[in-house]
Length: 70
Image (cartoon, rainbow, N blue to C red; front, side, top):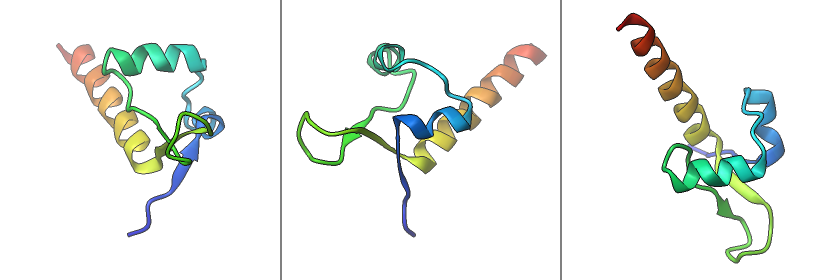
């Protein structure tokens, strides 16, 4: 299976319209998947595997639904 790598701008069409700073805060709180750099260093664009982001969205939806039914 090939995994698709997406960048920060690819998050918006998925409904994630957070700023880079807000995503950094969520990552530190372990409430958003951590990013990686394609270059292997601190330089280069932030990247995520698309399936990890999709799973995160599904988890958020499930938690929201569970809270609404509680």
